[in-house]
Image (cartoon, rainbow, N blue to C red; front, side):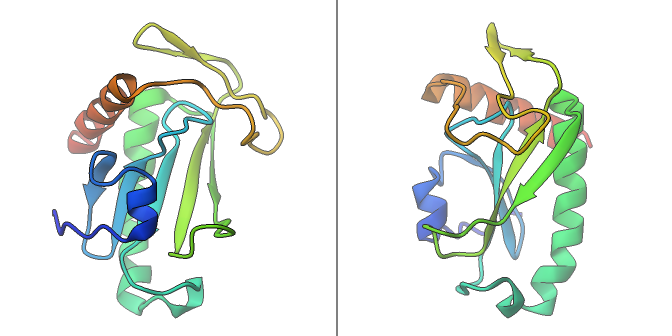
Length: 149
């Protein structure tokens, strides 16, 4: 379902170019700075700045979205663990950084991706360098896995 909602936080993370899937209440985007392969942003469409302020419809849909997201990411990159981090220190709209975690490096499109924080917390200071072309390849791969999940 494409609802074409792009709040300020979504735009900061590259919307509409980084959007993988939109639901009524949530969008899933590729995080342009790939902390690990397949790092995403899961963002609410409602104009609220607190998690508890989301509607019951948003919470209900969140279960569906996370189920599809986890299935697509697992199919795409075979992550070992998955971290959902709700930091919201800079960007006010309700969102999660969804960080797939890997015990071993992963290869994608000729590039090696590392999880510098494994087995501890994700290391946001260590980014796997990508460009817009590689990010679009990751997005297309995730969309294909999403559609077949």
